[in-house]
Image 1 (cartoon, rainbow, N blue to C red):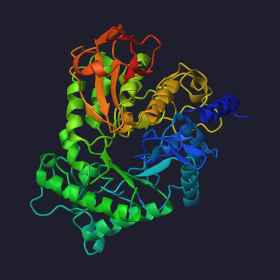
Image 2: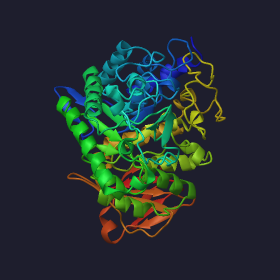
Image 3: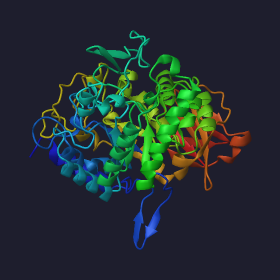
Amino acid sequence: MRPGVTSLLAGLLLAALAPLATAGADQHATAERTHGQATVPARSGVWYEIFVRAWYDTDGDGTGDLNGVTARLDYLKSLGVDGIWLMPINPSPSYHGYDVTDYRAINPRYGTLADFRRLLDAAHRRGIRVIMDLVVNHTSDQHPWFLAARDPNDPHHAWYSWAGPGTDLHATSATGGPAWHALGRQHYLGVFTGEMPDLDFDTPAVRAAVTDIGRYWLAQGVDGFRLDAARHVYVDFPQQADDPRVLERNLAWWSAFHHAMADVRPDVYVVGEVTRDDPSQLAPWFGPLDAVFDFPLAAQLVKSARSERNDGLSALLGRIGAAIPPGRDAPFLSNHDQERVMSQLGGDARHMRTAAAMLLTLPGRPFLYYGEELGMRGRKPDPDLREPMRWYRDPHGSGESRWKRFTAGDGPDVTVEAEQADPHSLLAWYRTLIGWRRQLAVLRDGALHLPAIPNPGLASWELSDAGADVLVVHNLSRKPQTLELAGPLTRFSRLRLASEAGAHIAAGRLHLPAYASVVLE
């Protein structure tokens, strides 16, 4: 028996039988539905990002694989997530996969197309949707398209962007590095690196090829796509970042792509990576896409949790409520490109719980990064943000990915095995919060309103839909706090959900212990 597997399986079984188990991923479901005698629990709307290489190894080569994702679906179901986002699974010369050499194949280190289809079938049986990273702003410089494009007389030459007379070959790209890269006497555009030449989406053949790639994966059973570097299809240089004409070209292309995918699968989910600083800059993307990741909110949630102060959070949420349709935001705390939340918070478990509580009581479709629910740490460089998922107390347990050595310094307590049986663990807290989202549809889909609460130690928002009206309050601080339920807050007189037994309402005042979170009706 592999190390720790007995207690791990026992804990997963208990969790799978618990009322927090998820049973589907329809992003718009809002309540329990009865089919004959069977009751399908409401959705949480929570997605979970997985780096397959780091997840779980089933063939003993030390690299996580697709069969490993299948083997751990019951863990994800017990957590309560509705869907998983797989980082790139196509063949690639890099460890991370964000430079693809074959868009219609599976990275052989991860398995086969048959393995992927089995994963999709197994996930769907558990009510878990699967979206995959679609990396089409650029290809690998080893992709057959680019190898052919080196010849100016080959049709694929027009699939990429090349410098012409008068081009500033020393120009800086929109990501801060060199924009142009030499290839003999030619220079090609690579916004990220020279190993990632940019496709030219003004070439009809490129648009047709990318659309066909999307259709191909939908036909395999994929539920949608996470669009890597979505804005950089047309934002190549810093001066284009706020150009409305460039934005219009981006939105027109992605709208056409989204419509083409919806023609194949009406419930397709398409979420984009659009790195902007304010909700007003994200708002135009809702419609062309189902959602975009809320980068400004991620930074603010971590900042407020760390400082124990609202410190601009309410103002930002007000702008989000005004700019983004209810239930459509894609909030998160960190991802594969950012230092892990626990590291950003200096290892403070109380602040980590606060950040999680805020994230998972905001409307939208939140995304978790694998291991976040355990409190895994990780700081730059990028490979150290993508370390193996920690399953067992023994880091050498069978199935543990060994694609790189651990550098974060997490001990045996930061593992699924250690946390699954502890009702006070961070993992248990994540399960509780996700369970709240399943209990109250308004936490997922409600319209966001910000009450005027001057106490900087509190973060609070109202959520409302056709059937509910709630007030969410978080004590960000290490000291007990009170909130007078007066004026428009008088209607919130019942404590529906609370993280601490000491939270209560008395004489028109809400009393909150340190770091407590509540939902009032």
